[in-house]
Image 1: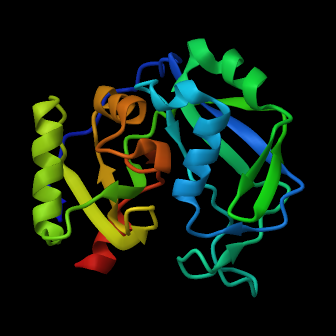
Image 2: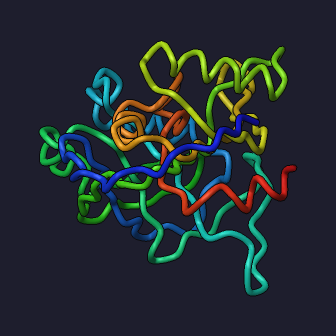
Image 3: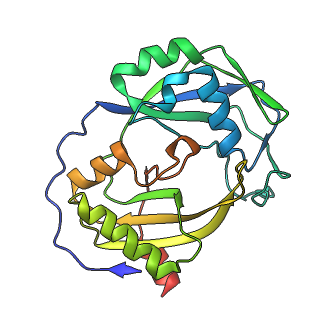
Length: 231
């Protein structure tokens, strides 16, 4: 865990809109495998081939609410299934210039995901966040590195891009299924980024397999409570 206190950040400038998320509601979706990242990627790239070649395109995995009110989120695995609600959406991050093209290609389209299916409804655009604490559910990790080595590698990679991290915390280790075997990932939270770095991370992500939901940063409310629990 990295933990450096920093000076307060000045008022944040406006968030650029050249990269956005398109959020497609799922229609007629009864269930989905929890571990669906590779299958979802394959289905979408089969439907829209240029998603594989667009450098700023990334596909969010589909998530439902966590365990609460008697509902228990199933453990990770292809044999476990999510039960999407009417509010569940599929998100795809891409340049705004290609948003209309993707809407035309996917709205009303039915996708098959390992025995499950759903139809994509009319998409809404969601801008990137001005938050300076970001969270990635999956970042590709090396099998031979421990948590500290993972964080050191991430800090080095971001440093080469001119991005300085002050507070970083990695969480769950999860293996995503692929045709060539399981791919190890770790969750990652970065806090107190400066505004430009937070935007750059959302626009560009980190690491490989962003078409499988890896290295995609989302806004998070804060890291302090998590840090106190981890210490």
